Picture 1 (tube, helix red, strand yellow):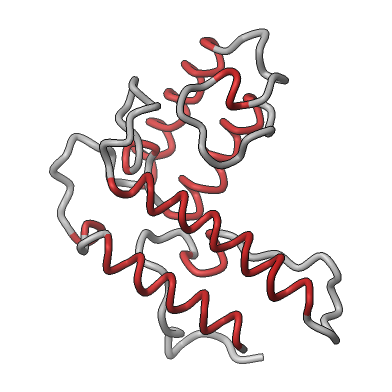
Picture 2: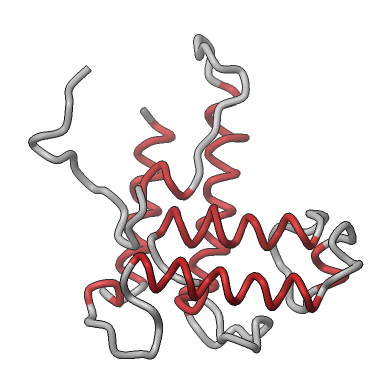
Length: 165
């Protein structure tokens, strides 16, 4: 329960830091529909895969500039994580956090929020979940999908129609 409250507080704080950006209408040239997002990200990932051809197994921080989290992860795997773990889990495109074509830039506050949330996920797992007695799963996991469920704004309450176990 304590780890849930900590994770909830951090998510709530992070949502406040984004300044409600997720509620703004599509105005920035970023894709907005699920189909547009999927195609946009597929195009960006394909271009990056071509750019790093032959370097896919090298550490991400060697291949890409300004890698602050996910160091040591192979560059090819990093692209899959970005497309799956972030884009799909948050229901947004890579352009939400990155300046397209200038991926190393830190111009968007959402990029740092994502880094902080990544660190929070890992802290919840290593500092709390793995130390809890009685958990059936000895390799517990928390990730973006745990709270976000495919939406930028994390789920803060359950839908009244949600199935009850």
